[in-house]
Image (spheres, rainbow, N blue to C red):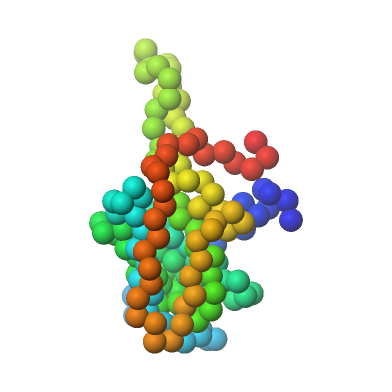
Length: 166
């Protein structure tokens, strides 16, 4: 699989998780085949401070189709949900990706109404953590496990987002 295809696959899984998180539960019945899930709360810090509003995705090491993840809160914590609606995650080993970006202007401000401002998207967390092929973060979800150690994401960065193959 090419780097771009891998990026598209990861982007698709993360997009489904994000969309489901914003869609909410709505009392929807559980889909057929949804495995038993266990509560998982993960905490992320960067330079010792909570990593707020980061997108967290758990990629199963098995071939499970059940996407899990969420978005960190003001404390840098995320209560993992499966398909963004169902609390917890199925038991198993996962690679954990964390992505936090912001877009901002680059270059001079527009001088008139015919000039546009160029913007750029920046990674605010080491980009290696945002890719399931390069992340070093892992978690094992187990029945009865109550606490998971916090993840320290290192120094704050502001690195331009680069799409594979570009």
